[in-house]
Length: 253
Image 1 (spheres, helix red, strand yellow):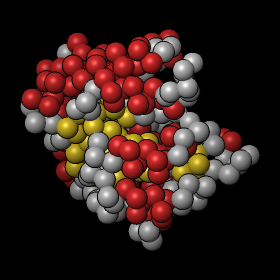
Image 2 (cartoon, rainbow, N blue to C red; image 1 turned 135 degrees about the vertical axis):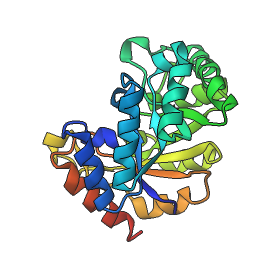
Image 3 (cartoon, one colour; image 1 turned 120 degrees about the horizontal axis):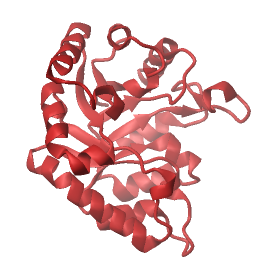
């Protein structure tokens, strides 16, 4: 398996970021994944300071999330951030509920929109793709699901496959890994707590301490184009424990 990364969104409620980077580096991670609010408003000096903190902590940021608004309206700014932080792969992470299409045609058009948004980044030599949640797997009126239409509209889109969200969406991860394995360039590695557990953490669990069968999933994912395996927990009560317990579990697979 490739090097394990840590999605910094998991530690967004535990500032300062400089301490988070030190903690993650000490836990054994050599990569982190950024998210839009982390760097969207930083000036050149602040970006340089962030890169310095990463260097001191022994981590790089090869992959990152950027909001659709910046990707579409200010790609030059996104590229500048990517260059400053050493980002090689950009994933659009989310679509607000009030912006989500209601039918297959609308989702295909959204895929086309992502395809267009990604062109400046692909032209610059970066990977560009979509990161899923659960809503992409909710059946549409015709029985199809948005995820398939997004990829139909965006033939060059890569996929950061968030397996746990896919499962929460009611789909079979192995079927989608087989179907879109060539598109998968990154994977979010997180776990789902048993029913009724970790309600204070939105039902998520540290990797290896939940219900997701990661041992078999890693074997299936090894046949894909995945370069980055990114540990994430959307709402941990102790991000340090999540980071340490998750990487320890992954080392056993």
